[in-house]
Image (cartoon, rainbow, N blue to C red; front, top):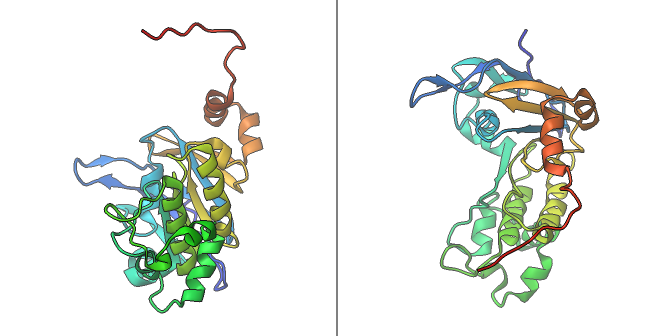
Amino acid sequence: DGVHFAYPPADKVSLASLEEVAKLDQRGGVEVLHEVSFRAEPGQMVALVGSSGAGKSTIAALLPRLYDVDSGCVRLSGIDVRDLSFESIRDTVGMVTQDGHLFHESIRSNLILARPEATDDDLANVLRRARLADLMSTLPDGLDTVVGERGYRLSGGERQRLTIARLLLARPRVVILDEATAHLDSTSEAAVQAALAEALAGRTALVIAHRLSTVRAADFILVVEQGCIVERGTHDELLASSGRYEELYRTQFEQAPDVAAAVTVS
C-alpha cells in the first residue's frame, strides 16, 4: 500500500507522500528509485542516510519537481505536486545545498530574491538569526557589499549562512537540506548548525546527511541503498537493530586503536 503525505491547512505542513515511487533516469532508462514510500507529519524532521549514489538526493529532488516520478505520487497538502504551479511549490519548499550558491550581486540583492518587498529591518532580522550580524558589522558597504565570484570573499560557512538567511526570509513551510554542512570545518559547521536550527524551527524538514552526528535528533531516519528504503526508525532503534545504519554509524564513530604510528616525510 502506498502512503500519502497529507497535512492540515495550518502554519506547518507535512512533507509530501511518496507512494511506490519509481523514478527512471531519462538518460539511460535505468530505474534509480524503487517503491519508495514514507510520510512526514507537520513539523517533523526526516533524515535520509546511506551510501553515495544510493538515491537520497533524487528523492529530495522529487518534492520541488526537479524531476517528475514515472509512477507513484508526491503530495503536498494532499495535492499531487504535478497539479501545483511551480510558484506555489517554490513558496512552500525551500532548499539549502552544500554549494551555498550566491549571485555576483550585493548581499541585499541576493537576499531579496526570496522576498522582493522585504525591508532593511527584515534583512537585518534574518541576518541576525543566521548568525551573520558580526560579519555585517565589519563590511564597509553593509548590505550593499557585492559577493560572489568577483566580489567580497566569503568563507564557506559564511556563504552557507547567507543562503540560510535567504531561506529564513522566504519562510517556506518545508525545508530540504542536502548535505548542507558537508564541506565545512568544525568551527564553521557549529555556526551553520545554529543557523539551521533557526531555519528548521516549526517546519517540516527533509535532511540528507553523510555525517550521522547531524541527524541523531531526527524524528525518524530512512536508510537508502540502491534506490530502496532498506531501514527506517529513530537513531536508537536503528542502532539496536544492528543493520545497515549501525554499520554506517560504527564506521564513522569507531575510534582507531590507541597505539603510536610512525610518520615519515621525505
